[in-house]
Image (tube, rainbow over all chains, first blue to last red; front, side, top):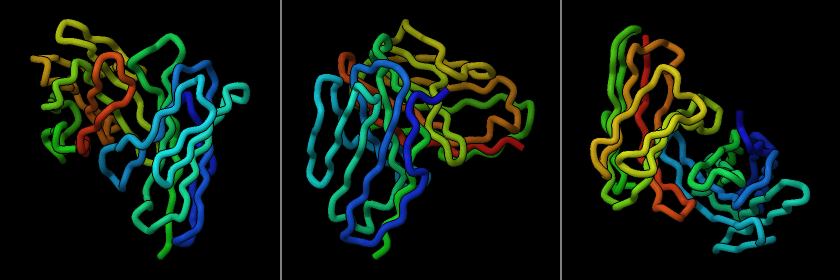
Length: 112
Length: 112
């Protein structure tokens, strides 16, 4: 079963707009990661946030984590057509270091 | 990521055939993983290995087997392929003590 669930399943925006994707999970975690997948290709790691962190930035990416609500959000600011991809959250459950559980992903389409 | 390679990239086989998917890495990581991705879904863990002598089942290991021939090589076998094993298969690696995983380009498998 999938630990994480992304919302929305699909998001379509114009270039320059911000994109926000959400992830909810069910059990306690050590950390949460976000990955990007371009169509049919391997996943690429974007950012990791630990359970004792509330917010993290990397370039145009901003990730928040609310462990009380068991949820995370990924914000991509000033989106570009090249950001078009699927985005997945992945959690490391509290007792399972080294193993990731992936959500079903959000498909982001950025129109030029 | 060229540091993690998978062969073949595409494979068509028939029901009942035994096939092997291979993964090699030059990252020097101890840990290797095999995932399966079905259309529109996230990744599900098939098997993982934390070192050459350590092999563990993941969420969906039935119908699959693995071999860790060396630190750099991790192979996935389908003993008797069936159509519902048609999917995209990914190999990934990680360093012990680190949660970020690095993915290969994937193998697209079609079982007729």
